[in-house]
Length: 420
Image 1 (cartoon, rainbow, N blue to C red):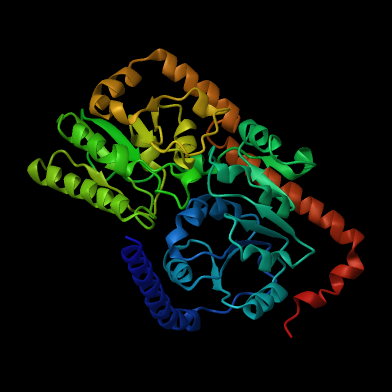
Image 2 (cartoon, rainbow, N blue to C red):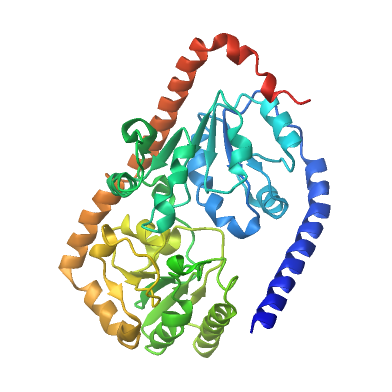
């Protein structure tokens, strides 16, 4: 088994090297075709050091940042070749590829960047932290009760933009000697103000069920994925009724670590295709698109693993179920929403239709979700989170200006930012 596993890892590594080499060739042409950036234009940068496999982390910020850019011009700094290729093709915001630290230095020296946003904890973030005289702000890529959300790495940033009261309480339990009032700034979920998009099906009397599982995880404590345990049986049961429409949106990393998990993912995709072929009016959806939002808002019921998807759905106040991990080693934060959520046990998958009917007609569920939504996101009135986001950025800009006046001489001598 170890020999097979090593061979698979070697093949994956080889494929990654080939993909990166191919991406570099195409990318050189893309970079040459890009017009030069206007000097001193951009005040905010989004630093993205990952490759294309983690594009979902920055995509969800496109619309909120595009709105913010009307006030403060925003530039995406891409360090990964495969991600840069996709960003050049799809990003509504200006993008520049900074492959090396020297490239990064040149860009930073030519722009008036005052705030740098980070959507993840990539180790290369530290290559950007070297630049002082600007705020380094962690904005994350979603709200959840995963162990990832309580990492001590929050302390590496000048500020962190958090969703609300639940995020602060979660961090207060693990971060020592941290000034929460100053450095953890609640903004709600501005992405929820952009939950829209064209439906890939014609609405009818069918009950729409969104199944949005996460990936299998790269360690036992984060083994939250349900595709191999719950997913196949869950989807099979829903397809058999003739009165449900399934929107299946698996995590883009599904199967990257565990081949059995990948096989289950492919089985579900095949089941959806077969069901649509047998009954074209069913219009089941395998959703692997870059747009996120319409699925969350349109579904009558959502079923998710422990992931940020739970909390995006929670903001809508609509019925939600969470799959309980089958691994006893999976770490579950039982102090937040997961202490009161509707769990879907693996033994209950066969009765999923009854579970869904109960959720849709249970008034206590609606009240409970409304209470937890307030706890996690504050006021979820449309537009409120966007205003809080913009107000917070304005606050940081004001703080920057105040420090810039105090350090006027130092600011004029940005020698560290100058290319050698």
